[in-house]
Each structure stands twice: as structure tokens, then as C-alpha cells.
Image 1: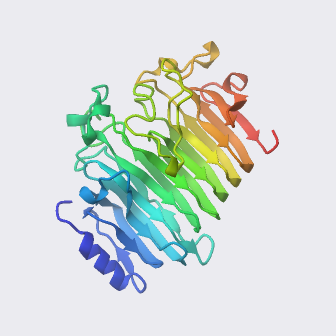
Image 2: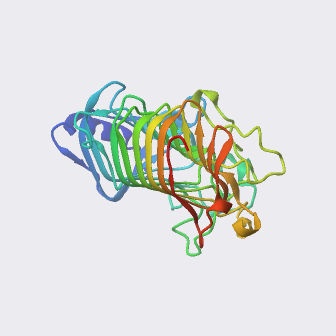
Amino acid sequence: GITDDTEVIQRIIDTYAESKIIFFDAGAYIHTRTVNIPRYAVIVGEVESTIMATGSFFADAKNPKPVWSVGKQGESGNVQIVDILFSHKGPVPGAIMMQWNLKSTCNGKSGLWSTHFRTGGARGTDLTPLNCLKLTYAVDRPECQGAFLQLHVTSQTSLYMENVWLWVADHNLDYPDHSQIDLFNGRTILVESQGPVWMYGTSAEHSVFYQYQFLNAQNIFLGQAQTESAYFQGVPPAPQPFTSLAAWSDPVFDSCSANDYTCAKGYGIDIINSKNIYVYNAGLYSFFESWNTSCIDTPNNKYCQKEMFRIQGNTQDVYLWNLETVGVENMVVVDGNTKVKSKDHMGVFPDGILAYLPNN
């Protein structure tokens, strides 16, 4: 995790990807610019071999660039990535940790297995309690920022995902006391694919704008999904420290009053102008208000977050089975109208509904 490995990794992939399995020994591999993955490749890590982005190439949030770009727009092929961890050293506010551009020639053959994305939380990331300790106004420190976006699935693609965790660290794994930290990552997963996309056993946690966003997407299966809102929200409120970008269809929080700390928080699942979205079991959790759990008290009309599951625009045929929420007032919101309230579906700890189907 010291030398710049970008050039040698690109050369190895270009030379052998279509004829050999590319194996990454356990370790951290510094990337200072984009590595392009060709349309046929099998890439396997060892105990979460770590791709570590860093440097000025990934510094401009107005012009974000991928760390790994899989395939080219409009290409078909098959790429399989197994047991790789994508992370970064220091802030990379202009980094898209992976951009998936490839449409599989055989549905389900291209994908990510046990491949994870992590901002901070470990030695070597330089995003530690030494400079980003919780409740110390880290929002004002650029050195505590993460990436622009962790995973972007572009429009002309298909993808299979299984056991994929995308985490913005709330604590440091490598410190004895697991010190809690405030890190500010823009977005977790953006899916614009026309499908099919299968997402089995995925988790997206602690980004500022959203955890999952489905934008102009269709033919998506999301099963056994889990999200958590950032523990530091609502002080500062979303989108701080960032600005909502219309070009990326970011949520805006203009309707939130200054004193409503439950409103300006990142969405768990945000669906915009999409169709044929199938969600089989999702747990959306908002445990904190600025690191305080006293907001979880549904029986007494106290909540940590106003809404986490939002449907907007020209969206059709969203099928939702088994939604569970914690600390959320409005479980399902469609175009600003609350369709399901948690107080009507209280459970022992999570509140839950068995189904929310089209035309409800």
C-alpha cells in the first residue's frame, strides 16, 4: 500500500485478462488513476485484496472519475470479480470507486461476488480518529471526506451481485477501542441500468445523499437489502458538506425546516422514473440523531428520520415485499405523499409491512 501500482496492474490486465484468471495476492494496491477492465475478465482476490485509490486525479467532485471502469459503454461481455475490497487513502471527493458499463452476454454470468467497498475504518486509509473523531466538527474538514460515489451501474448494463457490502465507516476497525468517527461520503449505489440486475445480500450504509438510488432504471431485483443512515445526521443536515447536483439527480432537502432534524437525512432507497423494481426484504434503519439514540421511540411519536423509502416521478410497477424500518416515521412515501406510516405497523423493534404493491 505504498508504491503506485496503477501502471503495472493495467498492463497485467491488458495482457492476460482474456486468457488467464487475474489473481491479486492479499495486500493493498495503490491506484492514482482509472484502471480499465476489458469486457472479458475473471479477477480474484485473496482475503479482500484492497484496491486503494488516492491522489489528485480523484480530487474534483465536479468531474468525478472511476477507479475501476468495467467495460465500455455499449459493450457486451462477461466480467467476474471475486473477493476484492475497494477503498481509498485520504479523501477522494472526485472518485467513483467502480463504474460498471458492461452488459453480460449471458444473464447472471457477469457480476460481483464477496466484493466490498469501504470508506475509512482501517489503518492506511488516513481517515481515522486522529482527525475525524465523531462530534468534533469533522464536517468542516476536507480530510474527512470520502468518495463521490461508491458504485455506479450505468444504463446499458446487466449485473449480478451477491454478498456486497458498501460501508462508510462509523468506527475504526483497527483501533482497540473501535473509536467512532465522522466521515462524509456523497453517494453509495446509483443504478441506471435497463436490466436485468440482481442484487442478493447487499448492504449500503452511511452516505450523505442516499444508500441506493434507482434512476431511470428497470428490471431490477433487490433481495435481502439493508441500509443505515449516517449516524452524524441531522447535525449537520444533508446535504452538508456537499451541494446537491442536478446533473446527478441528487436529492434536495429544501423543504426541510431548519429545526426538523429528522428531515434532512440520506435516503435508504430512492426510486426515480423507474419501472419493474422488485424489492424482496429490505431493512432500512435510522438509529441515531447526531449519535444520540433517544430518537427511537415510535410508541411516543418520536423518530430519528422522517422518510427512507421514496418513490418519485414516472415510476411504475414497484413491488415491495417485507419492508422493515427502525426509527423511521413514514415507511413509504410516493411523490411527497405518505402511503405507509410506521405507527400503524409497529413491531417489537423494527416496524414492518408484508407488502406494498402497485396501485396501493
